[in-house]
Amino acid sequence: MDIKARIEASPMTKAQVGIVAICLALNFIDGYDVLVMAFSATAITEAWGLSGSDLGILLSSALAGMTIGAIFVAQIADKIGRRKTIILSTSVITLGMFASALAPSYEVLLVLRIITGIAVGTMQTSLNVMVAEYANARRRATAVSIYAAGQPIGGVLGGIIVAALLTHFEWHSGFIFGGVITLAMLPIVIKWLPESIDYLNAKRPANALEEINKVLVRLEQPQLEALPAAPVSTGRPKNNLVAVFANGQAKKTVLLAFAFMMIMGSFYFANSWTPRLLTESGFSANQGITAGVLFSVGAIIGALVFAWAGARFELKRTLTVFFIMAAASFAVFALLADALNPALMGAVLLGMLTNASIAGMFTIGPVYYDASMRATAVGLIGGIGRCGGIISPILAGALVDAGWIPGNIYFVFVLPLVLGAVALMVLRKPASPVAPAAAQPAAAQQEALAESR
Image (cartoon, rainbow, N blue to C red):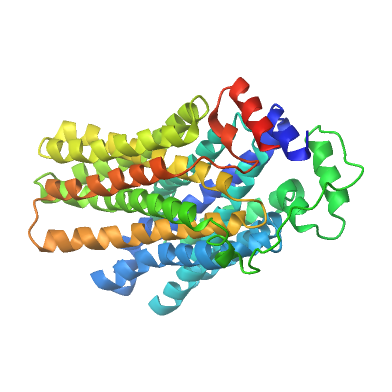
């Protein structure tokens, strides 16, 4: 049994749990860093006299930066390593948050939010890959889903923290707090987060054997006397963005990116427009905000629900079912939007099923690609997914301007989610060593591992 297969089949050690915990903490902080602009929006608008359009661009800047980072920058994790990329990203986010607090003008803050977003998108891709690579086969879906819950938890608690800060300080305080907590993670990452064994084995940097053995000691695994045979990469394009479409991989890349775009577009529409659309339907602004908070609570629950389901059932089929249920939840919400209590319950359901599906996409993406291009592929898929998150709120705004009944707009997102489910159905099971057992019972795991060797 080779080194990867051993880790896949072995129980999770304290070291592996610790690695997942560090990644979870960083994702938690990322959730705060991304949404701090939304929490501080009113205070910044009052301080600088911003128009609605100015504020809208500022609110979108971090998400646009995350898309750029995920697609174009995250691939450095396949070149210099996951650990170095995470350390670099954490450093840039720290500087970006402190610099944002000192921004003298709208234009400077806009540029800083884009830069910070690029670092966040780059880091999240590397964290996603790191969790998938260090979790064993049985617990991978659980580990990635719990990791995925970090961002909405950071968003919910971040709103509470910023609201408390703004009662005593100006808008700068939210960014300063974000910089402090991100900086506090930097020495923890440097000391306790190891490099990915998959990366070390695939790229063979200097002292690769020594570094792998150090990690194996922490994982309570036997050390290696020599590196295993190098992965074969004959005929593979040198550019990883090209490689994820080469040698028969284009179909799975397109299908995964399409599915991710459908779920992210639906999630960000519901996340950003539900409070406003309920207000348009005749409810109060506070009732709309309550629906938004309940959506976020549902999102946290959804990640944990997928953690449970993904560990017990076959991953691709489970994710397909969640896509279909998410599609149904949009139709149900559209039908319930006229009554307050059913609408509030529907908001929880929307958040739960859409974010459960997103957690599933975070889990399934890394298992379809080998280590040498995994960060590039996951970043590309996630970045395209975020494009859906940028487009869908704009589409919803156009439908509102066209006079659509607010509840009916939710019906628009049923078909994209059904099509996303179809894309997952068409997707073949992965042949990579990080894959088939991601959410199978123990006996099936051993069988899948045997097939992969």
